Structure formats: C-alpha cells, structure tokens
Image (cartoon, rainbow, N blue to C red; front, side, top):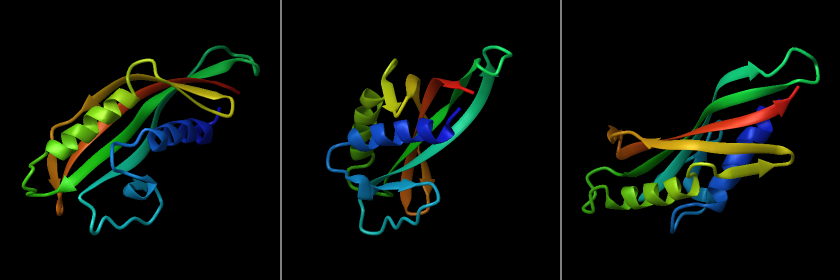
Amino acid sequence: MSYFETKRAMTTHLLNNLPTGLTGDDVAFENYKFDPANKSLWLAAYFIPATTEAMGQSASSGDEQRGVFQVSVFVALNNNKFDETQLKAIDELISAFKYNTQMVYNTQTVQALECTVNTGSESEAWYQRDISVNYLTFSNR
C-alpha cells in the first residue's frame, strides 16, 4: 500500500493538466506555504484517503483503496467576470480527471471514478468551488 505513490500519481496528473494560463506556482499543496497575493485564479489540492478494504487474508493479498482528490478553484471575490474564469478552469479540470482516467506513479495505478463540483462559497477575498475526484487504486501489502 502506498499513499505516497497514490498522491503523487494524482498531483503529477494535475500538474500536467493545469487549466489554461496556470503553472505549478499557482497551486497550493498541503503542508506547503503558499501566498495567493496578486493571483486572479489559483488552485489548492488535497489528498483525502477514505477506505481500505482487504481483498484477501494472506500477506500476498492486495487492498482496494478509495478516496477523494479535491481540487479547490479560487477566483477573486466580486470580480467583474463573476465566476466565468473559474467555471472554464473547472471544465478543463473535469476533462483531465474524467471517468476511467488512469494515473500512474512508479507501479501505482490510480483510476478516476467520477468528478463532482460543489456550489460556490466565499472564502476570505476569494470565491471558491471544489472539485472532488473520487478515485480507486489497488495496492500490494
């Protein structure tokens, strides 16, 4: 089982499929200092493991792991373009993580199962929407 490789597969896929105009400097990752000052659009990425189910009882059996890779999309609050820029970025991200997308890091393959987007909300000086990418992976013990 490798949470590290699962997270790395998903974050690498995100960085290789950023919305138009964004770079890795526009993504806030967990446990990393990030300052969104002077940005009109930026992302935050969160790895949220949920369940691990045994696929057998021997040491050589594997585990099925499910969880959520959340990408929050932020735009400046009260922008004159409202949320149009944000929704375009969300459309690009959903395309990158569509059903059955395979993401690989080393020997770990992660499969995107579905993407959902929540309603927007205010977060300090930003308007935020979250994309939840439900994932599935199989790991050796």
